[in-house]
Image (cartoon, rainbow, N blue to C red; front, side, top):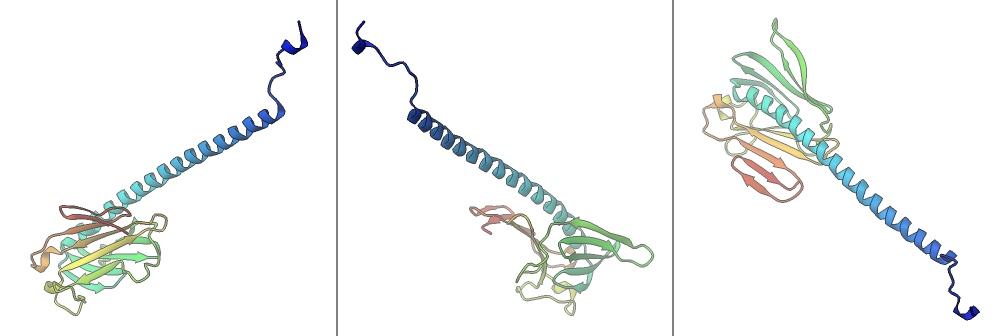
Length: 199
């Protein structure tokens, strides 16, 4: 057999081996980035869903308490003391915790945490806002029958989400309807009594 007809079966050259290893490394980095991003997105979504569920439970409890308010003795941005048929209660936002406490002498119940992981500082916003029908501020110096709505705002420390709800006390004899507002990043959607808007 002639030397010219022999084929070269020596395998991959060093350059081919290095190029294939570099391409495999790039592909591995891209795949790892996709997997890590997907896992982070799932984790954030799961955390946001858990926080929203806890917030909804806390807001439902606060709403039930404030719906049947017959009088309010203290109305502050982070604190409300109110009277119902059951007694006197206080809802307080202190630091990053919201608590509910029954303050009646003789039948007091210690403060119970309704929600935690709330922002300690809301900036220019307030946890509680009290309004008359004309959207002016209501204070305890005004008659209870003039209180149209109490708006509660929740801002969370670890999730960029703001949840608001408007409570219209029943005992003030003003005709109104409740409004539940969720501010979530994304598009604006309106469902009866529920509004979702950009944060």
